[in-house]
Amino acid sequence: MGEIKMLKRPRNFKKMLILPCMCSITFYLGSQIMTHTEAAFIHETKVEATLSTAIIFPKTVNTLKEQSEKHKQFIEREYGTMKGKSKATSIEEIKQAISVWQHGREKIVAEKEALQNVYTEIEAPYNQIQEELKVNKDESMQQVSIYVNEGFRSIKEKRDYIEKEISLKAIDEQIQALQQQLNVAIEAEGQKKAEEQKKAEEQKKVEEQKKIEEQKKAEEQKKIEEQKKAE
Image 1 (cartoon, helix red, strand yellow):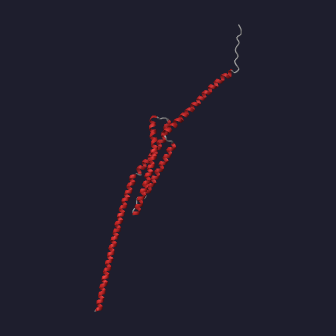
Image 2 (cartoon, rainbow, N blue to C red):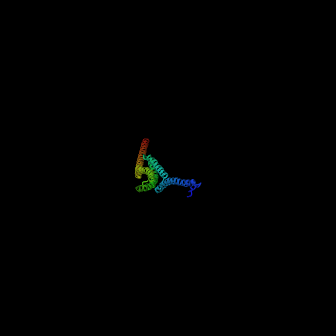
Image 3 (cartoon, rainbow, N blue to C red):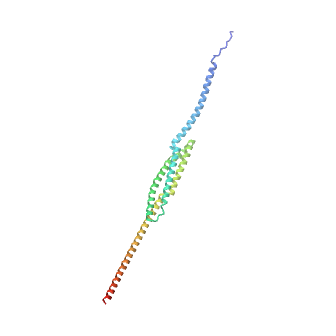
């Protein structure tokens, strides 16, 4: 029998084994990196989708809160100025007070409407999120609900406070009270003038009567003197 000769390994045999192994490792690592990247992307996409669904962002909520605070402070300042004119006595003071209250009312009505608009703007996404939370309780939705709920609560408190403490009904009642006070003051002023006129006329009559009597006495005295001369 002939000798069995062993086949020689090719010189590049080791390289041929190493190359597929390196490819496998690279593919595995790449797949892991892609998995984490995709997860992060999916999470970010969910948050963005949730925010998009909410139709309101934290910056917008903060802006609405700032606007509501400005409207509240303006109304409080204006109402304070109006209350400072409540105690009036003279007709001119009462007229001025009525003017201040009427113009102040117009400003407060405008500011209240603006405050209500801010409330309406936050109320819509707030209600939408409450409905979303019934079926979607993921983390991104919870995060959105936190800042929207806080903004809604803050703005609602301001609106409710203004409606309770500075009501248009109370303002109208005060204006009506001032107008009644003005009518009374004008009537009293008229009566006072009438009495003064009456006293002046009576005084005039007294003075005229006094002049008549003095003139009469003078004539009588003159007659007496003429009679004495005649004798």
